[in-house]
Image (cartoon, rainbow, N blue to C red; front, top):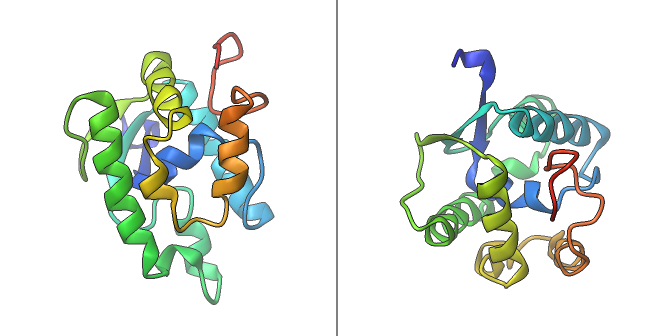
Length: 150
């Protein structure tokens, strides 16, 4: 795959995508997250990165106090990757590249719904909403193919 077909993705955004319904910190963030979800569902390769990724990097360059540089975010990334690795039964870390196909998305959704990712999401302001979305069967989420069940 070429670089244009690769999505740079930080650890906790992998979890955010599971419950993403088009809400976010700003219209720019929503546009980036929506585009990223679409690219990944269409088969783009995800590359796990430390720090700002394709979703938040553009905002980090223009916002005065971007949330991506808050002290809690790298820890959230580390926790998310450890928990994703446990859910998938294989190591997942910075530099890893893989396609987030329907099977992987289903396994991650099931783990999220069952509370496996709570430690990674504990400090996130969106956690109550995401928990409700998971409990509701992921209805209306954007990180899925049109014919893909929750």
